Length: 315
Image 1 (cartoon, rainbow, N blue to C red):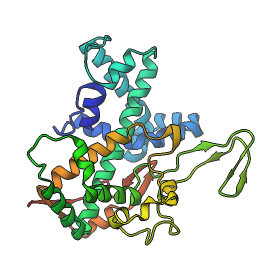
Image 2 (tube, helix red, strand yellow):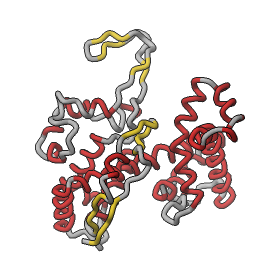
Image 3 (spheres, helix red, strand yellow):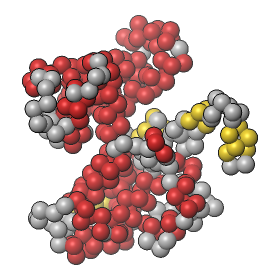
Image 4 (cartoon, rainbow, N blue to C red):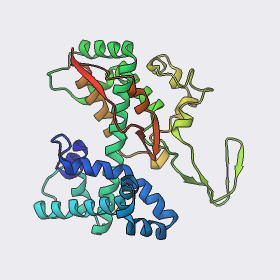
């Protein structure tokens, strides 16, 4: 969250400082997609929910107000940025400076602010959580990864992030986690052209929504051996280099609409995992963690227990 804030607005959200506002914002982002879905289906029903919010359970109440909350947060973020820095490009290297230099009206910039933070915050955090969970469950791979990190002798040095891409086990652990636990677990919708299309041997009429969940495609047993098993070796032995495996690799989307933050997310994950695992051992706090980490689909993947309790010890 704070990395996204620095890159987008030159100001962290305050997550690392324990800011209550940052915690509340992250919480509301989790409910925003449900709010938007209800709004698309029936604006009247959403209006009724808002009017009845004082009588509703907290989770339902949060869904009812999440859309307005994140919209107001984006509006305040833009207003505060302009108040502190003006609209001119003063050399700051952030995405908001670029948006202000464009011809977009403020209300569209506010939408982009929410879109950028929604896409960057939960997704990367979810993958990072499941990486730590899987390494806690598979200590052999945790030890292999730590040995690779220590052998690289990068700790305490200034180095380019490209150096981390030279570490095959690090990349394999990250990719295998994203294969099993894609952060955008819901299928990304596409519309067939007016004349229709043939998809995997099926004739699909025109103007039809088509969607494939990466959770399904990335666990295809015809492509991935023991598809429900955490096995980073598949990324080292060529199994995932086949055209079929690359086609099934859907978590970033495909084509012109592929995730714009793909490189940022991969850089973040490599830096965080390498910094933590080179200095710390991680293990489950209890067997309850397995139940807490069961998938729930909020468009983005969120663990059922909303937490992952782990113990970190110095190496």
